[in-house]
Image 1 (cartoon, rainbow, N blue to C red):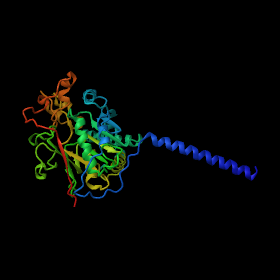
Image 2: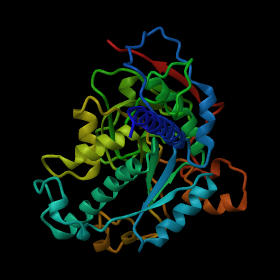
Image 3: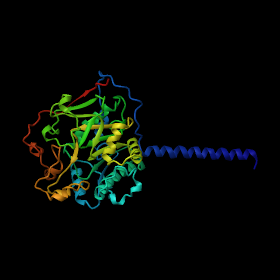
Image 4: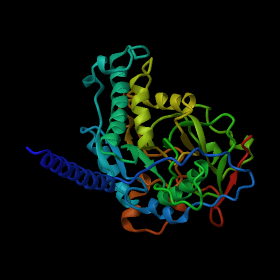
Length: 386
């Protein structure tokens, strides 16, 4: 073949490859929007007049609450929990994709990062390992589906009927904590520089040395201090912070327990999957997440207190409550009335009223005898970075 002909065909082949690559990767980028952290965030000046980016806040009112997807973890045999969850989600305006729960007995020890710390009792081991694997599957699903953000909720969770209004305020707070520029629209209404948003927990703490707070005052969905139930005393000391009994606060968190509801960004899912895969000792997934929030400076966790999501305890046999903690099965407790800790206008306790289209009034509250607040919630920021 003459040299000129070879050059012609080589040039043509190269041109075809360039054109193919251009259209292939252009289309690939269109499938999933980019969710990237802003450049290194400078310490905010205490005099900074924070302004949320309002045009993205409406996204929290969509069917996925401003995330790309919402998942619910459910064991197939617990159709009762999925029924209640699906109804509650529908009546508060969102939907969730089912992520099948895992039985720990089906998870071999050799797939775990370590056997150190693994419970010795078989039933306890299986319950903790199954939960761990289900949440690892959530992170893996996010990565494989190229989701830039996703929320996962446990099937027995409960939330306030005002959830979307709460999340609108929560999103303003996360924009503040992540330093979202007011002149730049973030991909997510929650800002773009976070790994984990811990909405439903039973213990949380402020990050040491970080004094930034986003404060929501006069919030009718905040439970009074004497009715707050948490796993431990490791919760924000609201009185010491100077907050009254109707205040909710957002902050960068250094710890957390329980996984009633939390969101991951894509980078957070990658870091969580990697971090829990190489842990030197096995930890229940919530303790492992809390450890990452505390010890990994690159893993940015945002907490809220009082929490927005908690675990519902339905009327009837207490043995139906948890698929992890089965201690209640031994006592045979029969609960006459259901309840949800820390949630004022419980969705699951008001299903019949929501179905009937009744008008919301103070009688919907779990504790209707408490004082009624006047006026809307107010927000302010505290910035005391050294």
